Image (cartoon, rainbow, N blue to C red; front, side):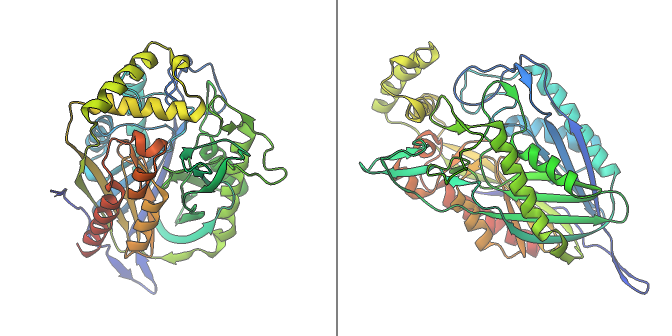
Length: 472
């Protein structure tokens, strides 16, 4: 049964003195959250420790208010943080600022070159350094407080741009009928991708009475472009820096969209598209220069619509959260027994003894870890879905990695003029593949801790929450 948290928000008062003025406010803040060297880097099911810093990690916040209702959305350069740890941060922010807990949204960018915070959702053996986790919590509180302090009258514009050829479906049907994730560039055994990318970029432009404008961009693709053992915000960092240099007195926040089945890998590149990329350990081509390219393409997409956004006068700021039940993808006894041996070899550092390589090895290990984790349950999980309304624009926060189909379903089913589906928001509970992906196979479905149908449940619950918020 879904449970509904309180929704806060009152309509803005409208004052008419020769012109209409909306009491809608927006504020911005940014803090540096770069960790010390030596900290463990999250992702890849392998040991990595920060040996350098390519560019800073940041938390960028936009605060909004209308009447007595206030909320804050923080874009954080981090791979993922689970619901339990996010709850600690959100409640601390609420206590420090006076915000309602449900009005705090923390959206991880999903950079694969950032520090592990709290328990690793990918591998139960790993846990982030407590000192950095505490430090990050303090910095997030600071970021929210500073953004709220910066609140000032604002108008809100929105538009939809397009960022071509930087996101690609990463699941493929092979000529032998099998399904593979990231099968390698120019692999002659590829038959066709499974699905279509969503190249739309949702853009919000806050033009304030004084101080910098704020741009929020929402686009879905994995920030796994760099790899290695040096800290980097990946393409979202390049996007922010590029746009802020291109426009005078502008600050921007990046919120990742439905990215569970898409990444930067173009398996059949056109001439020149392979520039700045080098083959990595898992058959994925990566490179710092390509992350810069992606950031520039996204910035260019925003610039194409920047002057042509549709301006609105938001009459409310409202938010709500539901806890959605999600059945667990528990293994059978036979599956659990086979997984135990794979996990034993993996945990002993003996992956080379498994008859797989590249992304196939990653898939087998991830699936085995999922089975080991769930062999004794639980039978279901509770997922936080959070919604924020700003007049005719809405944001839906999803605590994990939804497939592109989830983002499309939410956009299509929403009654708002523009809806931003945001991944890894207030939690990181796993992949949310479409139902057919469970029959087809591949890394995401085989590693997901949720039963088939989870994506469709999120679409239904998310659109229902958005509608209830609109009617509240």
